[in-house]
Amino acid sequence: MLQSKTLDRLTLQNLLNAYCYETGRGQIVPPDQQDALQKQLSQGKPILVLSLAPQDTTMAVPVDRVSQLGQHRLAAMPSVLSKTTLETNNERKWLQPSAMSLAALIIEDIVYRHKGDVLLDANGVLKRWIESYQGLQIILEHRSDEIDDIVEAQQDFIQTEQSLIYGHAMHPTPKGRDGFYGDEWAKYAPETNSETQLHYWLVHPDFIVEEFVDGDSITAELKLQLFNLSGASQGEMSAYQRQLIEQYPDHKLLPLHPWQATFLQQHAWYQRLLEQGQLFDLGTLGWYLHPTTSVRTLAAFDAPWMFKLSLSVAITNSVRINLPKECKRGMHACRIWRSDYGETLSREYDTIAVLNDPAWIALRVDGKIIDETICILRDNPFTESMQVTNLASLSQDHPTRLTNRLATLFKSIHKRTDEPLEQIAAQWFATYLQVAFIPLMHLYYQHGIGFEVHQQNSLIELQDGYPVKFWARDNQGFGYIAEYAMPLIDAYPELISEGECVIPEDFADARFAYYLVGNTIFGLITAIARTQLVSEAALLATFRDCLLDLERQYPHRSLFDLLLRSPTLPFKGNLMTRLHALDELTAPVETQSIYVDIPNPLSASSV
Image 1 (cartoon, rainbow, N blue to C red):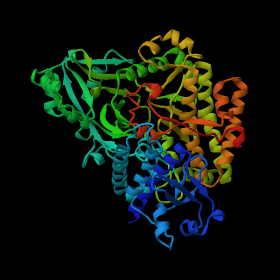
Image 2: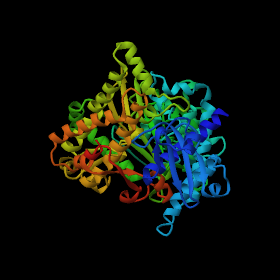
Image 3: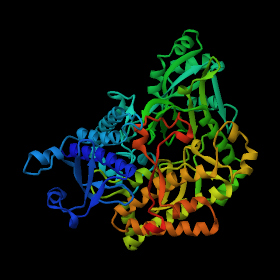
Image 4: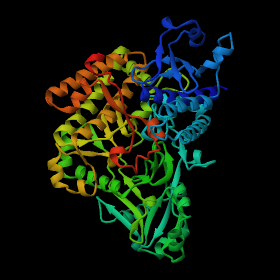
């Protein structure tokens, strides 16, 4: 019963927070301002109250933690009071419908208010919400006996990658994975502590395209690495696999996600290549890899690379298919950071590091790259002894207790140093700004490099509990600002022609304001404030002072004017993006997501 209530509350919490932030509707009523009817519901806590159309329904829910940055933590399930109930029942009474009914009411409100403007995909969003609900149910069932592990102070990279329990706090369907059915969901989910081997095809070289920054042939290097594995527990080749590879020494290996390998067998080209002897299905072999937060990127400490694989599954906002232009972006970024220029950057900004993607492999049939087969190989620098965490896992609440991993970290620092907890919390945030945010801003203005690092792609290396290095991953999302990156663009003109990743300053400012501030910094501020050791207001003031100091170094820049003085900030509306049925990987970059304007908590009028 407890698990069911937790499941209902968490899935509705994400949806409600997305709704309120993206629409600007919803009101927090503190206990001393509540009427008698609201006090029946509130348990002495603040309540979040919404008026929903078209049925003129009031929805309300007590809140354990109120956030001015939108990430409220619900204390219970929402209840409703309809106009019909008030007119026909002298005893005014809150009703508590099922979680699905409540989700439908929230989605229907938006659709009704946009009636006549645009056709919104309400049914599709509700379907995705139900799938996400079912996904979280699987996670809670698998992790119920070890759920407290997600707030342990000491965690390695893979542990944190597999501990993002209920996902993006401002996304309505964070665990939606349309394409995984039955046992597949748990089998390939990071949150169930799963592991899997890759599936390999042995393919005639005429049908393979590959690129490798660090050598002549990534397929040759991959084959060598797999041949050197020893012992069945390490994924050693079977006699059949070894014999087939030795029989066709010029053929190349193509790694695939095992789900994807099965999915692709339905294509006519697969059967044709198989029948012509141009392709041999080797099955699974190699390292036992763990899915990371993105699901389709797999990692293991003993593997030479991480593997970012195409996966024809709709995860959150997109079907996760790698595209050739993304591969090119990754290669160009890798070449830059491997060059003398990049080495200079690494020395100058020694708290910033990049997880590069130095290679990719794909099948090419009839002269066309099959996007669904693209495998990107990523640097794998982390060891079990390193404390590396993505910010999304670090910042999430415990599902059932009013705590998070940051609270545990602060206590461990206090035990070691005996410093006051309140001082530690404030110092931790200030250290993060020095280690990560400030150097990223210098890279932005001095070199024109912009990182699309939301919380999931922001990796923090910890030492003695404090941040010491920021690792940026997913370099296909790096952008080069036209106004500041001319030396780089002149040296690498392919950034424009192949990578399509040179962007104007005004566009970069808007994306930077969301990804690095609205998503990452605001999410981190909320998480630190959840510990009750320092308030969101105090942390926002610290951040504002940081921005003012940076503005003195880079005066008259539009980004600082936006962050410090605009009454609103652009914020990616994941709920509206889903209702408009946009796929972020295939839509044009200017229209791939719906952005909404949110009140700016950093503007002078908000301080």
